[in-house]
Image 1: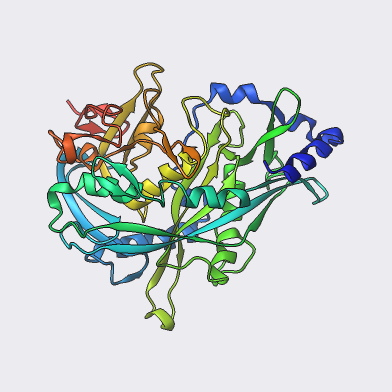
Image 2 (image 1 turned 90 degrees about the vertical axis):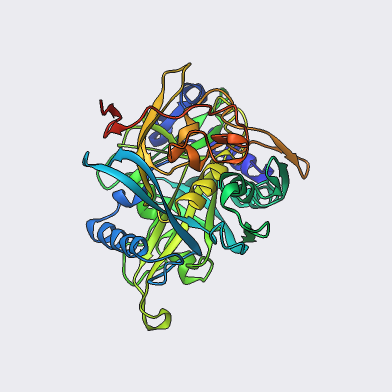
Length: 431
C-alpha cells in the first residue's frame, strides 16, 4: 500500500465500528486457499443480458474470420478436430474457435490498444460512508512495465509474453516472421467501485483479511455483488457501473482489450467467504449496435484482475500472476465461447483439480503446485506471471505442434502430458 493508504488503515484499525468486527478474517486463512480465476461472469447477470450476450457471441461464431457481423476486437477464426463430447454428452469432433489478432497464415501484425483502468474499491458501512478503500492506481505503471507489455527473451524470440506464446503455439502455421499480436498499454484515470455493506439478500457483501496486528491486507467481495457493480444492466448504458462509465467516457472501445486494475481484491462465491478466492476473470460486455456502426452488435472485450502483494498466497501467486492469466485467456478466448473436448487437470501433490470444456489456458495450470509461475526480472522489478497451457494441449495433439513439442509456455516442465480423453461431461471416462 502507499504511505497514505497505510496511514488510513492505521486510523481505521483504531476506530473500527462494532459492525465490522465479524468481517475480519485472519490472513492465515489465505494460506489454506488456492486462488482461482473466475468463470464466465455473464451467468450472474439477468436473463435479458445473458440472452443478448449469447446471441452476440453466436453471431460472431457464425461469421467468417474478422467477424464482420459484430463490432469487436480484431480476431481470427479456425477449428481443430479431436474426438469428444459437448455439454449435453453428444459426440463432437470439430471444434471452432476465435482468437485475438490476425491469423498466423496472414503474416500481418496486429497492434491492439490495451486501456489500463485503475479501480478504487470502496468498502461501505451501513450508513453509506466509506470504511476502507483499496486503490489500484499505483499498480498501473508496474503492470505497463511488466512482460505483458514489455519485450523479454523466450524460446520463440524476444517479444511481449502473449505474442511470444502465440508464436510458439502456431509456429508450424506461420508463413511470415512478421506475424505478431502486440498490446499497446494505455493508462487511464481511476474509477471508484463502491461496495455496499449488505447484499440484496441481506448477507454480508464484503470481508477483510487482516494480519497479526489487525491491519487489513486484502478485501473479499461477494461475487454477484461485484458482477452487478461491474456490468451495465441498462440499455443504453449509464455511468452507474464500472464498465458503463468507462464506455461512456470513451476509455474502453470495442477495438480494445481493456484491463481493470485492482489491488489486493478477491471475490467469494455463493455468499460464503469460505468459497474464496477469485482473483480475476475475463469476459465481454454486450451492447446493441446503432446506425453509427452499421447496427452491428457491440462486444467489449475486457478483463479485471488483482495486483497481489507478496506472501498472501502460496506457490508464488503475486503481483501480475492474475493479470497474466487473464490476458492470456483473453487472447485465446476473447468472446468466452471457445468450447473444447472435456479435459481434466489434477495436481499430483494436492489432488486438487479442474474439469472443464473450454479453451482457458490459465485454468489448466492454476491448480498445479509444481512451477505454476515463473520469474521475470525487468525494470527493477521481479514479476511472477503464470505459466500457460498451449493450444496443442486442448486440441489433444500428440506430439504437440508447438515449438519444441511443448504443452506449456514458457516452462515446458509444468505440463508434460495430455488429459485423459475422450471424456464425457463431468470428466467421466467415455469407455
